[in-house]
Length: 359
Image (cartoon, rainbow, N blue to C red; front, side):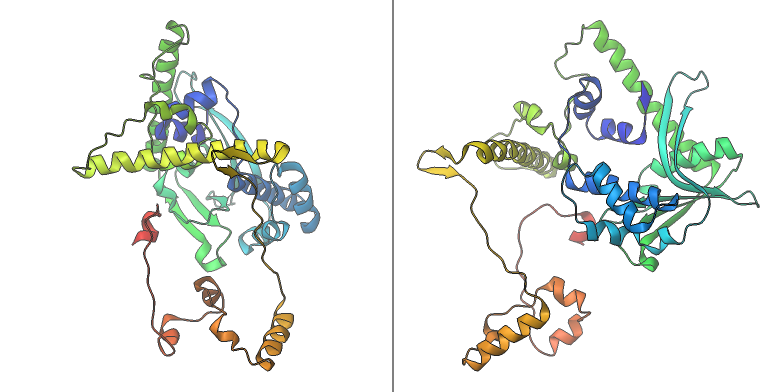
């Protein structure tokens, strides 16, 4: 089997998910973040290899967008200074290299951009359309890419960067210089996981392809949110109807909640597809149906006219209009400014949040 960082990461997160996708070759529904990421990367590749910017975006959408994407959003991400400032180097470089001395276990990947300077230094960039930033050392992806580049260039250090395209230039870059030690650490991580998978696949073949989940067990967690196969493993859910006694119990139940919510979301998508063609789905005295939700897009000038008209009729529009936190942030209004005019009102909702968001 040929391995990649994403395959190994999936196995590390949940062996069952790896088995469904790569051993059983079960199809997965496209997700908006994945489709957007592929579209943006294709647009960048086209742009940096000579296609005009607007045409590159349109061509990438036509080629990659299995789901609707916002053209303006794609264009905005591709126009990032860390894309437009690139000159020369290698774009979207595919590689295949053995992880072990015997050449049995192969690693493949696609490097967004790299360049070896006349001094011998090697620079590596990986563009991300993620909303959440993270450091290169939080996973082994750039470590593996750097290790490959060290093998083909002879460089013992690789200057790698994650560039988060949703952020302004100064805030978008997460850089790290990989040494031989860190690159070897990434290689050993990949080789250990790949070897473990190879051993399990061999055992699975001896069993004739049938097993009870002990070789590739389901491991519920945050990754269930984006897994198309969560519904296949909810049969193993075991939540005892008793109180949670300790943190281990709480974490176990929390992980199961994520898995169950993901499975429910997948089922709902199938229901929506059926209802689109056949109509409402009755459940007792209720039904699942498409309920219209109407909102109005009014440009700033017209909104001002409307507010003026309402004011002339004696209505205080400020009793009804609300400035959202997102819009206040866009306008650059600080908490210190807001404190001059009012008091904060804080409410709490119980939901899954990113670790940094919860701080």
